[in-house]
Length: 243
Image (cartoon, rainbow, N blue to C red; front, side, top):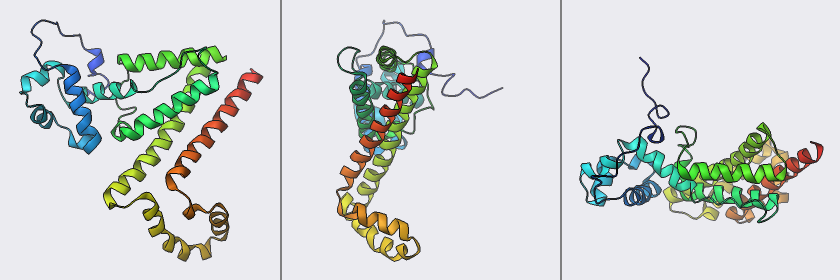
């Protein structure tokens, strides 16, 4: 018999509990504290026992709302998606609307980097995720996308935001582990790169022209994200003109 997975056992797919007998500890309290732990220590640092201790609550209060850690992670993921704002059609141009959404997605994932490892592993069917998806569909269809083109365009934008956030979150994690600033880490890498460039002249010429090690590293990450997003929007705009 197949082992139940995170999709078939999703918290969103089981019947809602009756309101009667609900404990004093609310789901919002549980989620806020769970997200605090996740932000500080990642998914590996979260357990039902650890959460109960931090809340000074018994198992009964927790398990009334969530059956296990997987359900808790699903709820926490939906909370984070609720932080991403997607403008309504008509509030601004579709390019600006997509930019707001993409930047918001990237920022939320950098703030809550543990979410990156959950994307695709749990169904995103919660109320915030559905509102997020609804706004994206409205924004893109209002721009002129139809059918599966809406899905493809949405996937492109989200993939760019997720990829950028993954790189940035990894950089921040390295900084946290080392206790150094991003500029200091880049400076530590420079002597090694200086030794290696004799075999890579094209790379050496480029890094000197771009002044890679002399620039603010966070600014480079921001510029890289903005450059990629603008090129994606250019391509999508051209597609709309041809279709």
